[in-house]
Amino acid sequence: MDLSDQVNAVQRTVGNRTLDAGEARVVTLSRCYPTDAADLWDACTNAERLPRWFAPVHGDLRLDGRYQVEGNASGTILTCDPPRSFTATWEFGGRVSWIELTITAEGSDNARMQLDHIALVDDDMWPQYGPGAVGIGWDLALLGLAIHLVSGAAVPDEFREEEWSTTGEGRDYIRGAGEGWYVAQLASGEDEGVARRSADNSIAFFRGDPPPS
Image (tube, rainbow, N blue to C red; front, top):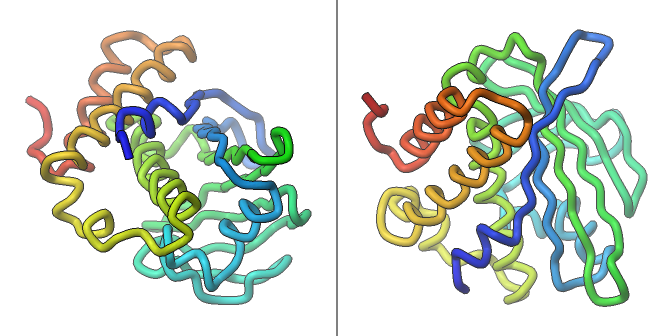
């Protein structure tokens, strides 16, 4: 795979939403995949397929069920409308945010996945890392999904190992994703200096580099 093509295949936007809990920021990723909507839904919700590209997900994967992503977040499934959409809480590090996944067919041979990650504006990660705090992590997941859907197999071990993110192609991919979030944050109306600092901080974090001076 040409990783620059993979970075550019993702559409990224940053927006706002008013929730009952207060004002929130919305980080959105959207990507078209060469498969039909039913298969894309299955790849994103089937507990047997999720470990092949994302991570093992344990729990009760149904409406109102609790889930646990191995080594990552947990949450509750709030809505589920197969094979089109689901929403869930995303509980990690003592903070609660929300995810919304929507799948739409684009012709008979392609389908689009849109992922919205929604966090209240009092999230203390945003001032330092901006949308890249969650965005780059989801970019890496979308890359894994692309590899799985093209190959039909599990993502190779070299893409899963921590060293991949800190050397060679992994560093380039994270840089490209981070620059994509810089552009998206600028387009949302953010100050250029703030967007640049956020992107540099999030790129350094995911690549395992020291924080920028």
